[in-house]
Image (cartoon, rainbow, N blue to C red):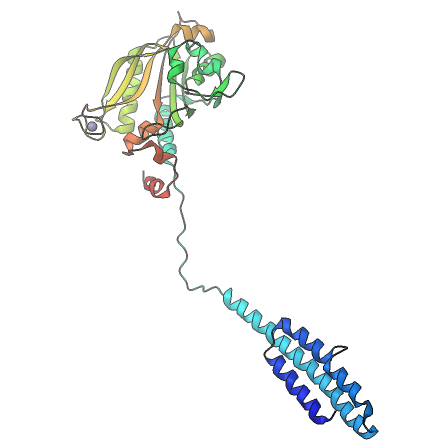
Length: 342
Ligand SMILES: [Zn+2]
């Protein structure tokens, strides 16, 4: 063991420390300074030397121990500083960059149409009522003069839950709920979600929206009903819109009519949207059937009433020329973005 050996250990230590990672530094420390490390080994080896040599080389070994400790400490500090710097570089925010475009959320076309319809009817003195979407069979069918055996039940293939409860197939049940708790005069509309087991296609969806209207008073006639729907048609689709009534059948109104508006696309001349007829069917309506009044305890000798129902998707499709009902439910922003300006 001589000074040369010590020099070699130092060289060896320096060369491994300068290129070491944080993890490697600990191994290096153990290798040189540990209990069984190279310096300990060197100290053991000087026992055979003369006292003078022991003093000189022993001191060299102790000095080298301090040096290696400080080399390791310096390298450690350097590595930590470098790591911090890299992290800062990575997380640096360039405040001169332009901002990302902010996504402004728009109103769903069905919500726009519902709100437009409500505006029109509340201006005419109607109030807005809501009913449950999980409805009792009684309100959805029986009280509306649609008993068990009635074929209208087959037309409305329903989602039954249990205990004579189902997802309502129409908003008409709200008529019954309102007449049960409110005495005439009554003038309400009720927009809401309805459900039927329809297969999905361009014009059918198992979830859809209807709006129901009901007026009950002592002096109400079919011409009032016609007047109200004409007014609505003009407000909704423009001054030039005409309304056509054709006899139809609904269990809860008598007489009943199917309502068509002038085709918004061709103005009545006939086009592909109206299949050449110039008319688009929009609603069903009629005078409240006395049987319905009987079910809710309203004197049908004294009071008369009219009711109407419209599909909200249908109105939105006509108004905004939407070709496929599925677009309402797919939540494709490319579609939804179009309605911002309406
Ligand atoms: Zn047309």
